[in-house]
Structure formats: C-alpha cells, structure tokens
Length: 222
Image (cartoon, rainbow, N blue to C red; front, side, top):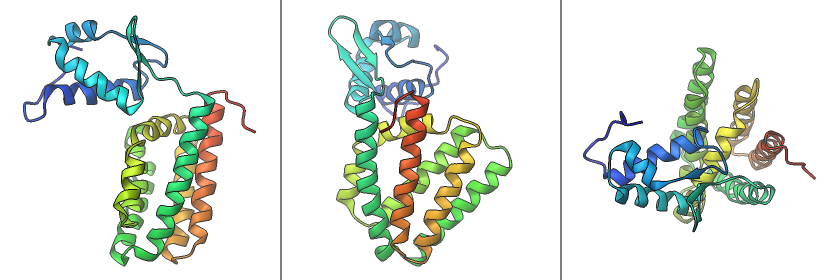
C-alpha cells in the first residue's frame, strides 16, 4: 500500500479519495468493514489530515458511514437502498432518453453507436470487466449529455458513485456483460429511429439490472 504513486498536480486528499473509493468499489474493503483513518495514514505514510478529508468526501458520496466509536464503516447496500437507487435511475434516465430522442444531434447519436461498436469489439478481444464497466458507464453518460439538460445531469451526478457501486456488482456473473451490451444495443436501435420505444427498453434494461443485483445480494424481489 505504501507504494501508492502520488502525483503533485492533484491534491493529496483527492488522490486518497480516488484510491480508497476504488478499494471499496473493487471489494478490497468489504461492506460493513471498519476503516481507521490513523491506520490508513500510517499505511500511506502521510498525516491524518488528507485521509480525513478523503473519508469525509466518501461519506458524502455514501460509500462510508460515520461511526462515533470507530471512525467509518464501509457502506452496505440494503434492500431499501437498492430499490430507491433504481427508482431514481429509472425516472431520470427515462427522461434523459426521451429528451435525447428529440434533442441529440445526428453526430451525438453516431458517437453512441461507435461506443457500442467499440464495446462489442473489445468484448470479443477479452477485455476485462473493469474496462467493460468503464464503457458501460460512458454509454449512460453520453445519453445524459445528449439530453442537453444540465439540471438533470446534476441530479444523476449526485448519486453517481452509488450507481457505479451497483454497476460493478451488476457485472458479476457468467455472460452478464454480453447481456448488458445486448440491452444497450436494443435501446439504441430505437434511439436511432428517434422512437419513444427507446424509453421502454431503457426501463426494461434497468429493471433487469435491479433484479440481477437483488439476486447477487440475496434480496427477494416482489
């Protein structure tokens, strides 16, 4: 851990924020695990101040939960959290698709199509899940950007870290990446036609995500 490479242009606390966030998302820190800022500072060879600032940001994101006795605990998805996150995603991303259909330029739609083609090609070449997750996130971000509604983007950005946390879990399972890509392609087929059926397919896609995540977490779906 003490070999972590620091880069001067980015403040230390932001570098630690990104590092610890990835450790949580990637499962190095398990849900419910306690994290001690003093131990982290010692491991990274720095003072507690940047670690404390990083952990406060992670608490704001929802990845850490403050505990008066032990400092911080890694966030654990609850059934209520899963439902609420996907209620938000479904409502906001459905609107993003609807706006994108009427507002996106032909060039913006072409960018999305090229991204899907690149994802399919990299998948054939055996790309790692981390890369496919990155491309997955980019797909949803391009749709959001092409909706041309900055306030909508701001609302989704406010829960983006938790969405990413769910996205990583959603990619676990044999053939899951291919299923997700297929659903993205179905959504885009109707986006390209500027058809509102794209909204319906996005809602189905997010529902499938939710069901898969619930199974991964052993959460019973209604």
